[in-house]
Image 1 (cartoon, rainbow, N blue to C red):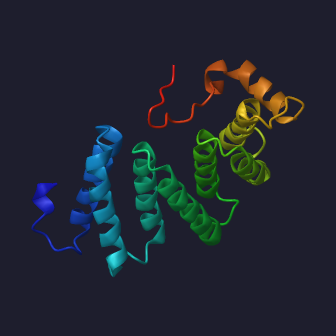
Image 2: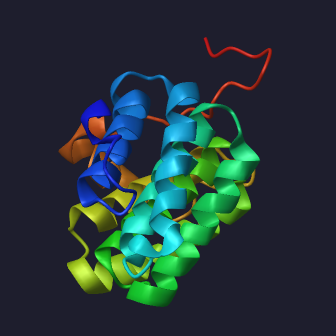
Length: 194
């Protein structure tokens, strides 16, 4: 990446190298604290106007920043950014777009991992009809959303096993039991998972 430092800010290879470095630090090396300023610089560069017309690229960088913030335990900041990204995707692509559905599912998973059951389950329930209509009831995305609803209802204090989502989850478990493992919320400071 150092090869591209001497290039002008508008150089697409410099921009790509900066983004690749941030992603490699976060996703590849697990060095989120070092990745965050690199990803923030990538976002700032993309917003300066050189690539501002490519909103989807900006949303991808924001998503990487949100993921990094979440991994650093900065959950509230991450949720604000994830909600903003999801809202922009709904506004630009519509709720019935595969990218919007996946992003909404990821947002719901973040909400659920923080035990924000009502918000997470409501979002998943909103996504499921769109996923079924767009991709079919047996599509991977529709099945994933159904599974996540069932898992959330199972883990939520307000959840009920009388919900029809449990039938979908039972069907998934018979198909592939390894796909149906329970999620765990991130440990908060001073807390450890067994």
